[in-house]
Amino acid sequence: MAYKLENQRKTNNMKLLLSIALLLSSMAFVPTNSGTLTVEFEIAKYKQGKIYVALYASADSFLKKPMKGTIITVENGKATATFENVAAGTYAVSSFYDKNGNGKLDTNFLGIPKEPTAMSNNAKGSFGPPKFKDAKFTMLASEKSIKIKY
View (cartoon, rainbow, N blue to C red):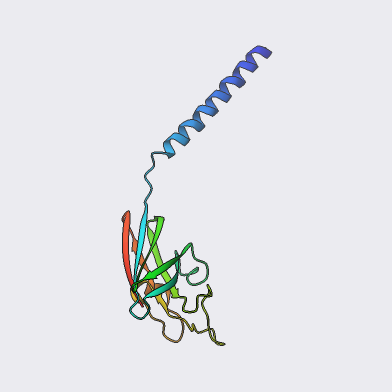
């Protein structure tokens, strides 16, 4: 009787391991709807320096908690940021040009930026920062490119 129970446990364990292996192998073939987002910046006034770029995935996180961020170098008034593995969805980009090179967005006593800022769709704020709905864009393809002007 003990022999029969031991064999049944081994069989159940083998079935479990096989099920897990099949599940994991099937996940490897699930297509992902993610791709590369390229953000091209055109900065007429500044020929060199750094731009801090943030990618947001919702109105709730917009200008608060980016899902991805990068720092890029401006050369001859142009710069390009690339975000890899961006899933299909709705996003917005914010950025600022770090004029004094201190690595942060300088603001006045009211919180208004003292350094140039720019958003996707070249969205502008009215009595405050731009809204997510004005800066949002949709990424459906495996590659998407947007342009932002300062």
